[in-house]
Image 1 (cartoon, rainbow, N blue to C red):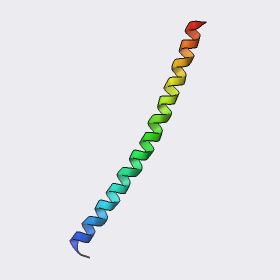
Image 2 (cartoon, helix red, strand yellow):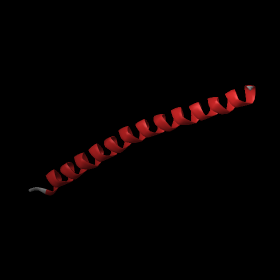
Image 3 (cartoon, rainbow, N blue to C red):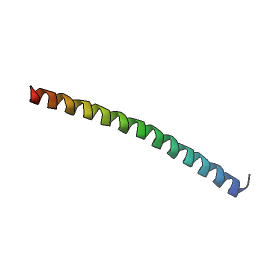
Image 4 (cartoon, rainbow, N blue to C red):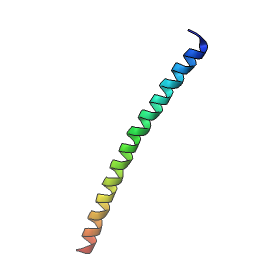
Length: 49
């Protein structure tokens, strides 16, 4: 294989890896945000009572 083809394959693998990490991180951050929001609402409800 030519070095240029090897470089392009490595680049493609890296881009796909970065994309996969980004997508999974967004889902994790969204879930954490929902958990924090529900905890804040629970504290607010307790303070109101």
